[in-house]
Each structure stands twice: as structure tokens, then as C-alpha cells.
Image 1 (cartoon, rainbow, N blue to C red):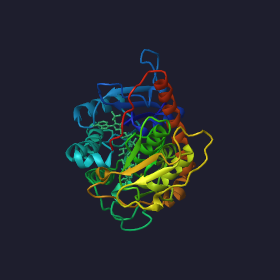
Image 2: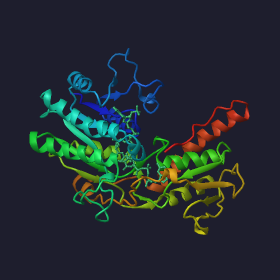
Image 3: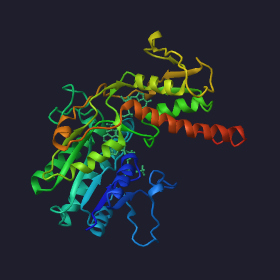
Image 4: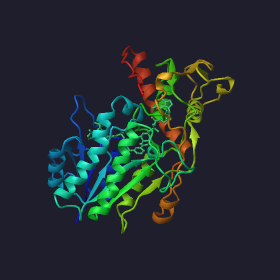
Length: 374
Ligand code: NDP
Ligand code: GDR
């Protein structure tokens, strides 16, 4: 029997990799996409299947995590073997500006899905994965963080995700549902949203190297993160739903770097020299010139990284470092892509599109570059 999966957030970074992964495993994949005034399926266009074809293996449904009747109808139609709840307002800084919406989608949206599964009598047959997060640890109580480290969320996003974490545990305990939390540390890729820090850096510096932007404005570049590759992490999301008993797992690399280091690697990949300016920056912020394969379009010393306090958060998560020992031991999971390899892949992709843009500009097609805001 072909297995059926329903993915909320299929148009996002993880949703797109997970859909690819499940299609390769022979699943029929259903995804919920939001109605938008512009196309929002760029990340899944390459696996899109024309619904007019016989037996499409990927089906997209319009929906929203704020809409109970819509979720219930889709679940009733699809009767999935597995639900992956990846949909969320996932930007931490934005959650301070839209806390109520974030709670509605990220916290109550999870409850809506779980309750719809129960209401439809699917709680013994449908397995449920919840996209939990290292942001739950917030003001960290222990280094490194494990499945037993106490939570101290530091943003409306993290508080909403804490509700989602516990309601998932509660439905497992109360109704015997196969429901799991993956406590995932930051994971990135060339498909990462442009306003998350890694992508903002690889895209911004690539644009600067091609003369499309002048300056990269950053927030707290001393923040420390444990960054993995999204492709490694979606594999683990699936593995968690294939066990005999449901459980919660930390997914991380076990290695930590600063935002500043990520900027430095990106500059090295691009062969450009950086000059840091702004609050808290001293001569240690200056990064040496590095020879790259491609001749830089800017002269060494030209590239500025400015600290702009608008990107500081009202409450910051300064440091996160995960211990994935349980996932390694119980599931045999180990990440295959290093943080530096991931950075190189992201730079290569962003440089390609910056070069395309620069070429168009050179030939008189001056399409504005969407500027960062996050
Ligand atoms: P993205 O922001 O790339 O994707 C989020 C997805 O959720 C998008 O498809 C988005 O749709 C969809 N979405 C947003 N609001 C709604 C809504 N109201 N109803 C339905 N769908 C909605 O996130 P990632 O792929 O990076 O992350 C996936 C999940 O994992 C998220 O829940 C995130 O919080 C969590 N997570 C992510 C980590 C990471 O480092 N990436 C780490 C730990 C947890 P649209 O495309 O239309 O905006
Ligand atoms: P995070 O990711 O908040 O950890 O949440 P993000 O990449 O946004 O920030 C990481 C760290 O970098 C610092 N930072 C900046 N961040 C952004 N976005 N823009 C900047 O200019 C900037 N300058 C410094 C931040 O302050 C922070 O310390 C991500 C999301 O994917 C969540 O959904 C997920 O749950 C967690 O990772 C794990």
C-alpha cells in the first residue's frame, strides 16, 4: 500500500526537502499551501505534478493553520498515515511584532491539527510529527542542551512553540497517539528564507561582491548557533515516525559557531575583504583579505558590514548548542553535511543568482534586488 503523508508548510525550506525525500520513498505527498497574491511555490515547483496527469504523487491543497474547518476537511479527504506539522510563522524577530498571530498559527494551529485528527477518529492510525525547536531552551540552563534540559523561551515564537511541544506530548499521553517532537536546532540551505541570518549573509555578500548592494546591515553577530543542513534534518523527521514507539529527539550537529564566523567564511568563499563598523566593533572585527577563485568585483576593503541596532531582539538567545546523542544512539542518525560545506553551497547558489542579476543589469535590465528586512 502506498503511504500517504500530509505536510503543513510544504512551501517552506523544510517542507520542500521533506516532500522530495518522501516522494523518493514512494509516498503520495499532500501539502497545504496558503493562498497568496503572488506565486509562493518556488521551492516545490521542480517536483510539482500536473493534477491533470493520471495519479499525481504530489497534491497541493489550499489551507491555513488558522482555519479549523479547512484542516479537518483536508485531513478527512486525505486520511494520511503521517502528518508533518512544519507550517509556522517561523521568524523569531517577526514574532515580537506579530505575537498574537504567531501564537494562533504556531501554538493553536498545532492544537487544531491534533484535535482534527482525534475528531476524525484517526488518532490510532495517523502518526504526527511536530516541528519543535531549540528556541525552547532560550536562556540556556545547561550546555549542551539535551531532551531533558529545562526550557526558558525568550520570544513569542518560542513561547508559542512551547505550547505546541506540550500539546503534542499531551495528545500522546492522553489519547495514545503516535506523536513526536523533533527539537531541531537551526538548519539552513540554499532554500533558507532570505531574512534568516545565514541566508541574509550569503545572499547579501554575494550581491555586494557583484556590485548590486553596498552594505550588509546586521544585528548581534556574536550570537552562537549550532547550524546543520536542512537535508540531513528532514531525513530525521521521517525516521522519528518509523519507530515502534513515539519519542522526542534533539537534532543538532553538536558544534557551535558565531554569526561573525559565518560572515567570515562567506567572505572567504567570495574572496572579498570585509570591514566591520558599528557598536561594539573594534579592530578584531577586520577580516583579512583572501584570494578567491573568482576575481572579486569589489576592491579589497570596500565591503562593509554595519551593525544596525534595529536587528537586535528585545530578548536575545545568545547561545545554542545541541547534543544529538539520543538520536545517534536510538535512530543511528548522524548529520552528513558540515556547517562549512553548507555555507559553501549557499554561497555558490547565491553568487550564481547575483551574477545573473549583474549580467542583466549590465545589459540594461535593472531589476531591483529585494532588500533584506529581518
Ligand atoms: P519556513 O519559514 O521556511 O516555512 C514555513 C512554512 O509554513 C511555509 O510553507 C509557510 O507558508 C507556512 N506557513 C506560515 N504560516 C502559515 C499558516 N498560517 N498556515 C499554514 N502554513 C503557514 O520554515 P522552515 O522550513 O525553516 O521550518 C519548518 C518548521 O520547523 C517551522 O515550524 C519552524 O518553526 C520549525 N523549525 C525550523 C528550524 C530551522 O532552523 N529552519 C529549527 C527548528 C524548528 P508560505 O510559504 O506561504 O509563507
Ligand atoms: P533564529 O534564526 O532566531 O535562531 O531562529 P536567525 O537566523 O533569524 O537568527 C540567528 C541569530 O543571528 C542573530 N542575528 C541576526 N538574525 C537575523 N535574522 N538577521 C540579522 O540581521 C541578524 N544579525 C544577527 C540573531 O539575533 C540570532 O541570534 C531560527 C528559525 O528558523 C526558527 O524558526 C527556529 O526555530 C530556530 O532557528 C531554531
